[in-house]
Image (cartoon, rainbow, N blue to C red; front, top):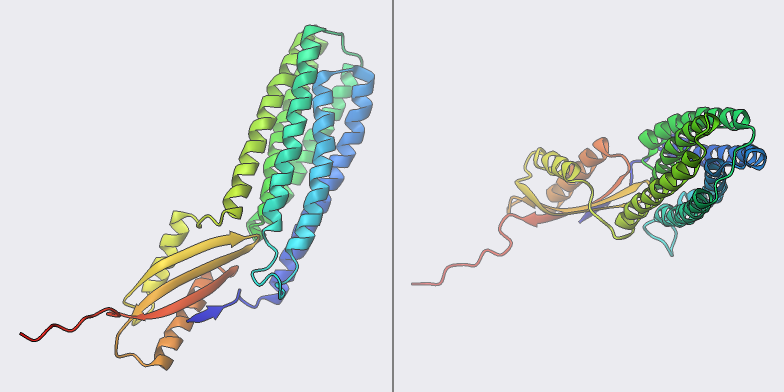
Amino acid sequence: MVSLPPSELTNSTQAQARLMRQATYAALAVALLLACCKAVAWWISGSVSLLAGLTDSLLDGAASLLNVLAVHYSLRPPDNGHRYGHGKAEALAGLGQAAFICISAFLVGSQGIDRLLNPQPLGAPLLGVLVMLLSLALTLALLKFQGYVIRVTGSTAIKADSLHYRSDLLLNSSILLALLLAGAGLERLDALFGIAIAFYILWSAISIAREATTILMDAELSKEIRQHIQQLVCSVPTVLDCHDLRTRISGTRWFVQLHVDLPDSMSLCAAHDICVKVGNLIQQHYPQAEVLVHADPLSPHQVPMEDA
């Protein structure tokens, strides 16, 4: 049995860790800045949609702070107490974000219902519009940066944060539309938009929690990736077949285990070399993978025929 740790790409690994930290700091900074702007605009206008945005930004800040701590912890190297690393801290952070988002959805929904039953005119709609335009610009810039970080690192925590801010993009667009309509005299639509936004935020929380739970439950990699790994293994000369492929994700690391069928007559040293080739080939395509390869003879359970 041959175990290969993730490819030794120290500079690349450090660059990925740096990108992940920068993404969490950027998300926290954006959330706090927008919370301050929306707080001023809501205080002046009294818009429920702006209150929805303010509440969401405050919880964004709390979730992003949790993400900063979780990513910092998940990037710690394996130790004697955590031989598989600390990557699942990212999934735990995703569950924490889902909890924050659920709270945001219930607060926004309750405020929307109250304002729908007791409508009030909005003040300073232009200020609210300007704040929402700023929110859209900053959120789009953050999403672009997060998308780059996800492509490079595959981080679960950054994915959850990005999904969260994609919902914010719709949230901010809806708030902007609600403010424009309210400025045209359709104040009740502000409350209706707030309620609709609350439902969408809740759905986003469910999606984030589902993805985090999948990782915590050690779900397999996608069918396409597993099929590709099997094709790679069977392409190695003298490998007759492979079976018992098992995969899972922990943070930015993948764990891949499999058995390869080799000719019965192959020596132990030759079998070891083939296992190393198999592991190296998988890591060429998936550098984040830690690969464990076990060699099996083609006919391990062959039973000799009884004498007639």
